[in-house]
Length: 104
Image 1 (cartoon, helix red, strand yellow):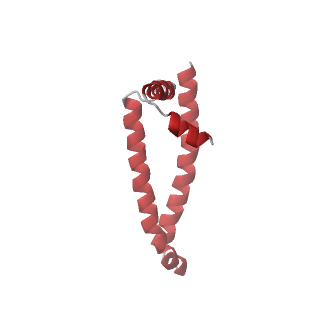
Image 2 (cartoon, one colour):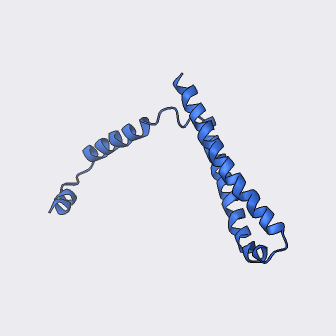
Image 3 (cartoon, one colour):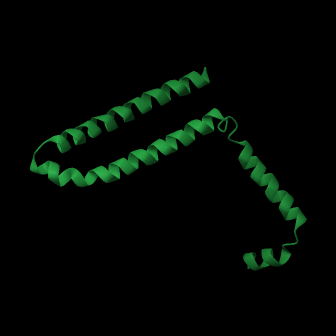
């Protein structure tokens, strides 16, 4: 049940975002295809927009890959593993000199 609620909320939020971005993108295309002076002045926005879309597509692919490989199933484990590794490394090394220099 919880997963369905999260999925529904994600779809709703992404839907509104896609609608807003799509509207602005269509307005830009219509502006650039017109023969007005504003279209000539707005042509500079095409290159950054293409870069933004390519970077966003790359991040979306990485997000899909991570979700497909189950990297979001247990988000607490990396934190606990890091703390356990820190305790283990502190027990193995003699960092008394370093600890004293940092504390002073």
